[in-house]
Image 1 (cartoon, rainbow, N blue to C red):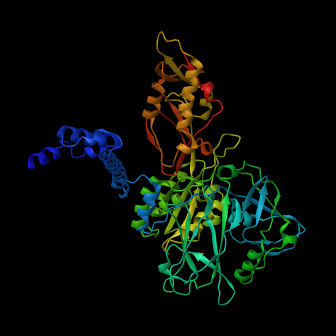
Image 2 (image 1 turned 30 degrees about the horizontal axis):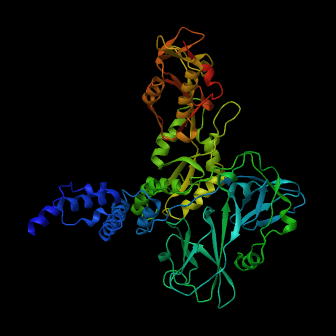
Length: 603
């Protein structure tokens, strides 16, 4: 018997071979072993009891191996690839993933002469319609009209943004009175809910009054009478609302009514083009429930605009709305969660600020860099000081604008934020000018203020957009951007190949434009000539290439680019033909997109 057992269990398999088995291969292995032993024969007959048992064992093993393979990786933070699993893992460190974000629109406001001079507040959830798309105020917006005639209300547009989507009310929830009671905002699958739009109001059963609960990162920071809640985007794609337990945060009583308002976005379909918002009227959001809530939670001294007043306000925008964001991916969480845990949700170091801003404003920002005072003075301000065209760097238009709106009187302990928006904007002279508008900067500042240390102040700075284009110049020539109009990148094809020259030109153009595409670029970028040159050289039929000029006999091997600041051209202009790292405040772009094909020729 012992011999039989020894022979039967000697599989002679690699220790990791279990992972290669599926149900069919395991069934065949069992059947072959039984046949070799010759003790049982029923397994050869389909439908026999033994054959059925073999099938059950094989398929059960298949399921177990599947779960083993999945959980062996998915239980580890560094290996997990499924959103649901990594979301559960980071829950243990109180990390809250960022869910989908809607499109945001900045605007300019105008009040007509029919609106008298006074202080006004547009109530939250008021909206404008742009065709079939709706853009909404998520918070109360206060402004002052100071003249009797028509007036541009600059402060309204500088301090507020519109969120694309429609405000909806979740079905009323009745509290059970449990400590740390949960309400899950379980909306229809596929509904894009803007996380920052979620507002919670509770009608207390004891008083009959409505109380607005404010969102907090942690209930443990608050006392038993504080009306606060935690919000978390869970592994199922729903938002969880968690209330206090009468020790950390106010506890709900049995019978309390919970009202949750949220914004449903149209996603990519909600994006509008520049100029689509053009003197559009503002409408009040009105429902019987919301009217009762607003009367209770209205701050003291505030008078909301009524129907007669609100129609005297119109909104316009010269910019397109931002693209929506799908929220954090698995890789985003893997990058951001350790930083969150290290900082304990406090903004102290440069990495803390950058992680917070990138995580929460992916629908606004293409890239962001955070500078301390030393770096700001020694690099950013030093750059403007070195420009011959500027006498007083602190009076440079973009620097002066930012300091006027956002800076305090001190110039120490400041955190300088350089942000590049996702929306690209150019002047007629091809000069890149897509700067964050004041309302977007204010949005970022308000979010950062919740967690920054008390001794620091947030100051915004604008990036220096640096243009690139094909250019050839002799070492003794005075550089000017006029050279790019006569410069050419010449492609030398391999001998004997019949090629479509226009196809080669198009391929080279695509390589250059893709490399300098706004969504592919960042601050402090490495302009890698090795990558660009290898991509061009890998095009079928290309033997080599050089840069020349039609008005000169200059001939420079390889790709040569002019790198310059079009605003201060005479002070900041260079020819480069090797890998170059941009400073932390510079952002690259391709200058003349429309005519790039005319500057590439094939011999």
